[in-house]
Image (tube, rainbow, N blue to C red; front, top):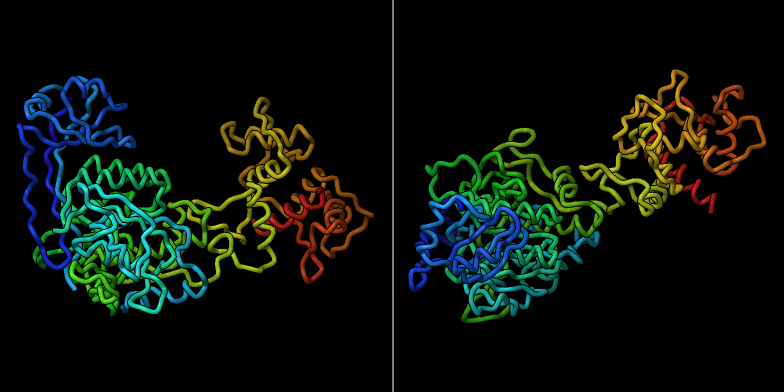
Length: 554
């Protein structure tokens, strides 16, 4: 076993800094800890140790359990066995300071007018609970990790405030959230004092993973790096969940800081800072290299929870990075609804391209990449495509058939050229070709290339011949004339001869193929009656040719 790691957490309450003492030891000299294993959870070892298991964190091969103090002390000197580490539980607090222009500032009205309201997106608000009785909120469900308390109550008000920024209903009362139709789930991990234990936070994240949430909102912070927390959030991100976290609030202007607080500092989490209504950074907002985005975080009115009166008057003006964080969560919900096929990584890049750069040009320690903005245009299949354009239906057609997809940054790049390797891969997918690498025909095509099997099979079928020097030049852009030749061979188009384009010489090797594609409605050429056979074909043009060829074959 490895030695017991001891860490302590500090988080920031909604109206003022509160120092939360460490939790008391449980009776009979036992202590609740997080036990992590090198491989799978070793239940036999746990039984030998006399562990009382409270919950399992399958994603990181860990359990939360109570152990006798003597067993923990022995673990500090024993380096053998299946256990990787035993860590103490810790204390979390909400990341806000005190008491809405923010809704307008991120241009949320434009998104709602376009119909992007977060519909169908599941958001886990891991916080103090949510006042589900509030008439301006709709809570889809949730869970409490704190005793017998209900996740649909909130003795602090912080979680309810966060929920309102995301999903305040678009009705005639109170406030409206930036994603009013998102499915909000209350995951209560913090008590009415705004503090909670590490075990609660870990269990809340594990629940969000198990329930296949789309977004996790973490408006809570700690000063310490916790391996189990980092690993669990990494697992959540790897499973497609998008995670946003508060950068943290500085308590005094002289407070030293090298970066944001945790968990926002982890790479799997989008660290959110706070700005004022003049786009200046809030003086309490943590700065550092991990800051990715900023959003409104001062003077924000939202839903609240008042123990004495549950009416539509339960609202409060608040500030802090825990207030700016749900604005970002809501914007991502808009983009998820608009582009449901994009991964969390692609969405992360997409939102960066739509923001307003503040401060120093590019990414900086204060504002990250800049101020988030709601979606402003009717979405096509990809953010860089146009709706109802000449290529729109064709790109959708081949995308639906898994012939093509976007780039890692979430773009399609319709005007970019495609390589000869890409062209053969897409043609192969289009006709259901079975890639075959048992024989290799071109020395300049790597045997491990994604396209090798398609290129080899296409050569065997006579669709391609390669270059005069025996190479294939897989990374070279494919010409429009060459694409016509390959398409003509694959789909066996015929022509009456001659040429319909002024720049296509009938003696050229591609002349007959171009004419055949034209006469069968596969290509059209340009307004000046040219075909430009030597020009590189674009990704949008290729999509049109492929979709028309497939429809011709039907």
